[in-house]
View: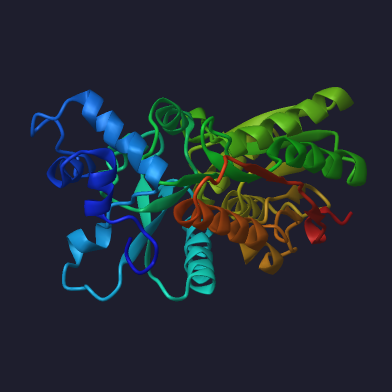
Length: 346
């Protein structure tokens, strides 16, 4: 083992009875090119998990750094998701790594993919891109990819439950129900909508938020419209709500945005039409980013108190899987709480 307790390539080769060249080929994604059978490739990867062997990615990229091993950690997120959420997660992962393992070197990066196309990320299945990763903002096709393929490196998911992987999330379905209760019971709304992206950009989290909201409205026998947006940004929220308001005069008195950035755009659409918040339309958002408190009026949100706790928890979970043996699969679900502000203060 090296000075940090990690199994070296030569030690791993001796343990499993395979040459170092074969192991390097497997983790460099060149098994077929060099005539290594699928059976041997699967054996090497399985034994790597058993013995805790991780390829030294930094040695491939920065061979001049010989004094310390550098562990490369990644946050994988889609281009379509709000960037600030992933940026905050990167900072938390880096801070947690330095706090728990200050004697080691880490490189933390964001790896981005288009929704539904995470399979196209180079090195995602051969261990050549990172030593461990936190994955968030995946679509249904991305989730299916991980169900069908096991990552050779530790991977933890945020906001989605993928069989065979550990995860951390907030109860999205309950969040949707609570948003409906805020608009129906507290604000007395009778015609409400939930704004969420079209199906190709819908994640487990956003779908749960929509389903919970719609179900609560159905139980309360209140009219509910699912307002589809072409993305998760401000423009998408403005365009979708503006289009709806222009076609349905006086047909909406409460709306739930599944993304804060959608809510920012929705505010602009209502302002353009001289609609007052919350008197004409009450609004509930999410709270993953801090912009809500600075909107006019301040946005009622979920999760603001949980974002840092969730990021810290998933960071610790990933590092435990990377450095501690026999860490079992685990799933942590936070329960949502609402932060009431001016957008629902009728």
